[in-house]
Length: 359
Ligand SMILES: Cc1ncc(COP(=O)(O)O)c(C=O)c1O
Image (cartoon, rainbow, N blue to C red; front, side, top):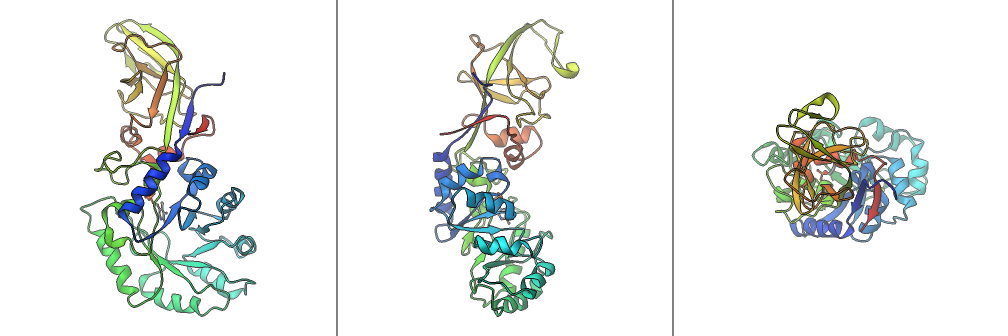
């Protein structure tokens, strides 16, 4: 029997979450963001579940796009960081991929080398994130330049990305939108602005295409809103088993660094899951797991292969009992908060070690 640490990927939850995206943005096409191995959920599983149900898939780079192609994806695939060298156009053209053009180097490379086939591109405008994108004041000129280029496909989506859409009181999202719409006024081109947070909270940003990532995977895009309350269901369910039980006397300690000390006669269950599987090493004491229809607190340091929980108040726990680290009962957002990080990071940092099952 293999080690019990396991990720269950719930395809029905993924489809449920896609429906929630459709509910919030009923008039927009959907670009499903599947970069970084579909946020750790598994590219081929996610792509096969969403193929035919979304307008396009979003990845960071050519290598990820080729993986999607190898999964049999026929939908449009967009490279959100674009190409890193002119040579990549050979493969980009062969596989009919769409590239984002976000800086002058990419723009010059695109325009300076005639391409054999019409190349689909998307232009990125920097309205405040200040990572990728052209200045708003130059975007119209750039748009018309690429539009008149013989080897550029005439349907050019123009997009931007929000830096604070998850902060409902922050005026910056409205300012970014205003800047975007002001500089593109009168342009008859498809537009795309909204990530998950903007899909939920900023309907004026929905435009022609929305780009959900985290909400597709069932975590909340907004810290103050609960994923379950938004109707989202966890796609990634992280489980393992109890592999040992210990009786600990008052004043004895548990785990590396002896950071946790028993104050009463304590029953400790050892769970086969650690940071080598993707559970965060630094986590607040008493972060819950779910076992035998109850919550039990994590105590002591998370080690590479194991973590320890206090089951004193749950009589009957046995070796072999199933433990949910996050999923249906323990929201990944709550674990992320206890680890002082985000659900994005937790999902993306799941390692190759847990077994994977699709349900
Ligand atoms: C350009 C772009 N659009 C959309 C998304 C999706 O964001 P989220 O996962 O917050 O929905 C990302 C993710 O970082 C992104 O880089």
